[in-house]
Length: 217
Image (tube, rainbow, N blue to C red; front, side, top):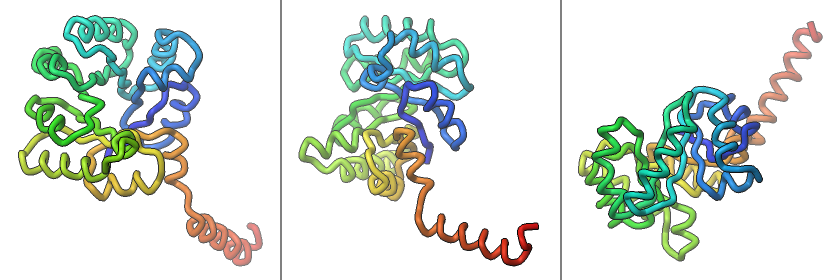
């Protein structure tokens, strides 16, 4: 399962490069947390590393979508631009054109099985399912993700199903069991996934016993 870090903070990105991440994904809500212009934030992100950067288009109309993509393309010069485009009729219709232009296309804000079916009829690279937000809406986000993944496999689709809006380790583990191809999580959750008290205690025991065996030499 690909691990994507959800952040726009340069220090977090630098820390995340220590881990086996596939790239960095953002959206306007994430960029707002940086308290600086979005263009400056994107330029900072582009200045470090070599992994793809995912930028969220906000328009749902063809003209607006293409305008935002042109603006993003001017700012991302050193890496692959991963286009995140919200589910809409115009977005779906633009996919063939964007693929001919060799863009990586990720249809986002997918919140139902029916939306996924429509999205997967195009050769998109990623499909982002908002597991947490679906659950917040009183539905079962994990069940929705599971249905989408099962359908994708049965229909022999090459699109990678990406689990987004993941807030805790339990959900991270469950989307992996479901078979999500990718997941977007904050750095804090990625770091937490490395922690377990049994691991910590085992390593400490090894160190203590090694000290006894070697006398510190």
